[in-house]
Length: 569
Image (cartoon, rainbow, N blue to C red; front, side, top):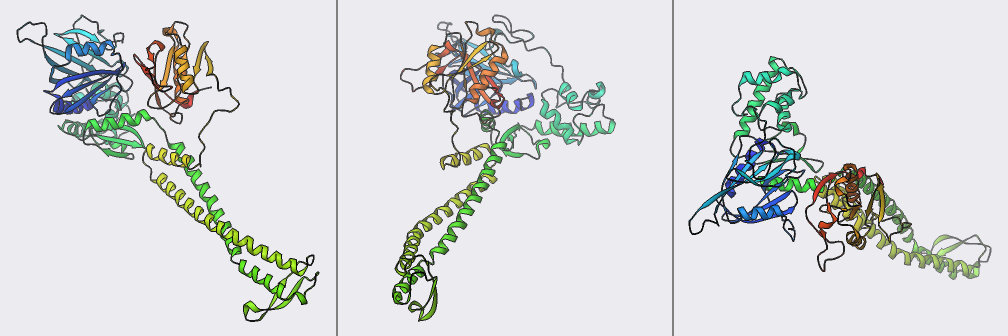
């Protein structure tokens, strides 16, 4: 779910509660479109603002690595906001714009106690999300200066909200106006989205679901509109409550939605309730960045475990049968004794012999003989069977114990898999099976020349993929400053380079996507259906002195979300 205006209202309340009156201590820019601000307010708080694909603003407990050389925008924020008091946090109606007003002593005022107010304006408009530094109404700095916007954001000009708006206040709806939304003949949920302020697609679709009306119905009649009206009133009444514990919905262990109110449309999903938006959004975006889709993995592991259990059951049956044979070992020794005790009555060529069995109180016993062997050799054959079974019995007993332990392990992992309700649970089972040798780690084709990076060509652009940490270092070291460098986020993986011939801005978007897919596929995220990849020009990739192979620091990076499974080698 993208954060809509009404959800932002609830996040704002949490920010106001913890940050208002606090002092800004540290400002960092871990990634090109991500800012974190440390605030002291009877405790340490970290504010996160992302204008990336995952545009959001909230408190966070996640720690980020900071670039050795702070980007210019973070330096500008430090100059005007660090040491200031966060006096107010306001929202423009139910729009996705938050203003953080910071009061700070004017360092150029001489001896006079003069204070100035600066504003950090957060605009959460999807791909056009931005962060603007404003003082006395004038724009001092913009995170992304070239984004399309009306009016445009230009340094030195007066800050104005984006044009648009004109929607109805969800908490003061008029029944007649509400009914008129559906006169244009569009789908019900789209008409709600286009006319009610602060709601996104999820909340717009929630109203017809609660009204038990198809979301894509067009031109509803009066009775249907009445149901929609009642559902809308109920939903907005819930959203108006001052404090709501956030909810998160999961499907097959993957987070699919978050909301300040219970969503009927997700009634078949697993519902998690959190005490704060900080906890909920940290969890949601951490799981989304992992990006695992474990449906196929779950099925593969279940099939593997069931096949292995069948194998173990068969092996146990075989061992039990051999142990039953081993129980006869003493009888083989006894028969050898009986043959030696009756040598005078036996001859070579005899197929059987009737003797008195002194091991069983003199009862008559029939002994099977090999006519090709002498009586002495027949006795030795029986003694050999006895010794062989005696030696094998110990091994069979140990084998039985091992198989029983293996059976318990496999059953436990099958139970864990069946009970798994998150991707981490499924991957934990997979890792346990890898460690026990049931699954082989994927390796490169031994026939390939591993001394050089893999090379691909897309639309005339050369793309190189490192095979190991040493090659990753070499790719970075040998790349031209304007080449593009890629690496999957949060996973170990290959470094990927696009050779740009000095024209990084000319690289087509689909070539960038393909390089990002290669970076994700050649990493620990290759099973994922969604992975985030960072990329930047090679001149912004640096190898710290003494760092281990493959480790680099980057700045000025952008991110792109791709499906590693879609890569075409």
